[in-house]
Image 1: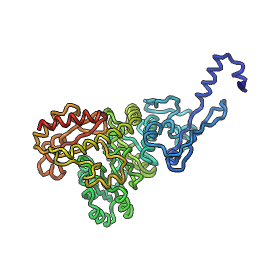
Image 2: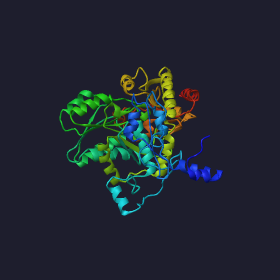
Image 3: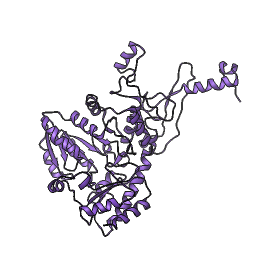
Image 4: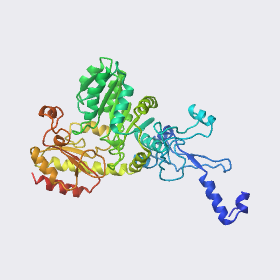
Length: 466
């Protein structure tokens, strides 16, 4: 065995040698790949991922080379390692496998020169919790890699993400928002009732009415097109690539709420969208225990949104960020199970004598199947269906279910069920429900990660109660 060339190690006792070597190894800090480098590494032809090691002056210069990769990094791998082992420069200086929770609300500087270097962008650090936090930054880098985004921002809720995006990108008194009649109801209400009072023009179109969209775009004053895909609760899908091409020809931006798809199943930015928002509460966090939102896009657009985000005060807590980081690591496994369960159940119910119609883009019978198949790798864990019964018959069906909880939301480990006529439209008129496509016999089932056979048996026995 070759002797160490270090006189410190040669003269030290065995115990001291071990301590010194451990300290030397701990002093090596991986400066992880930037988002651009990380994305480049996921493209075909990228064979190496080579983290650069930075040492203290007393350390020996070394380098670490990752194994050659013939294929792109999968979303499953990015969900585990992006933002951490494959993170952004300086977000977290730690050798802990689990990202630490940095709970401090303010960060100090070593000197006035150190502060000036930070202000001038020559030193990466943090200043105040409302503007950024190391734990939150790890989460942002992780989601950014999954979305194939240049930049992204985590917010305190999905609705905060929507509001910050709209306020930042649509100028009051001059802007024009085009949205769809099927977009998230609270977003639709904000656009209709709040933006319109700011002198912003608002136009609603049907989700796949491309002719009307073209006519509105030809007016030449559209600032932003906003919609969900898939929509809730009817799981309609819009052709994101086509819409992006139409809007960009007329200088309009495109924002897609991809919550019901998850970053595993759909990446709107790669299809031409300018901004993608999520309620991170759903598939991304995945455990029904934390509320958050996120916005991804170019650095230019996210910088504009971030300025509004700071003013709105929609910062997420480091504890919540940590819980989402932990949840994200299993998102690939969870979504794969939810995709599979939903598709099998949709096929089963489509052929059940008590089911009149099933809404799920994974079905060949779905009017949106071809669009969904062209832009999604999975169809999600939510299905909706109409049962051959009335309002009270559906209540009996839902009350007879033993596994799903009667609750709103989606994307968690537990299956949920709701009757939209009761959960979301109770007390509203027949006309209001009809305008939203809501029938008394409509059921929305949100699948968790329970065994398919258990869910199937439960649903079938509950249908017998009608």
